[in-house]
Image (tube, rainbow, N blue to C red; front, side, top):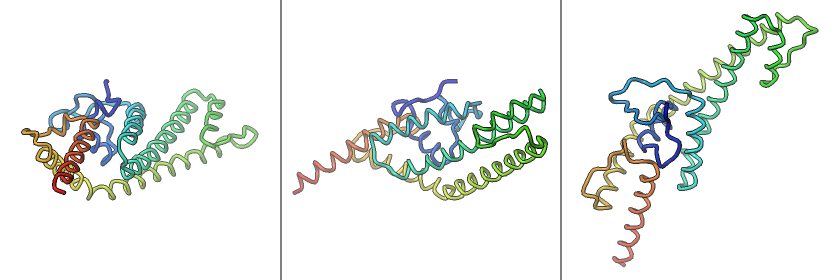
Length: 204
């Protein structure tokens, strides 16, 4: 699976879709949500590369809202990672009966005392799993609710900005937001602003 790794590769359409929905299938190179089935992805790998893209994006623009949204995604991904690891550890212990594997839970702030009742401690870990699931579910619901109404607004804003760029830069062609990269999009906006400044200078 090949994924986008920079603003020079990721299309602006995919960029905003990820921000809207924290759905990292849009990181897959060549993926088209109009015609393709959802690809299988390594969400952690995609997320790590998207973090790099956001860092790069922050270097070429000043968009605090985008960075804030990504921080919310980071929180959810970290909680999901913790949940998956704890579940895997419990499954290994169940299959192998190797209680020492429980020591790995220390990475997540869970200390197992072999001098105390192990079954009770495992039950407490199971409660932690349930709590994590609920926390992730709530955070995802809040995130989705907040941006549900914004999804169409973002699309409208993107289409409107697209049109303004086409007119302002006299491109004579439509800008394809599904293929135009994030970096080129930022450069087009910068060029449009510069052209407007020059026009205002000529007017005065």
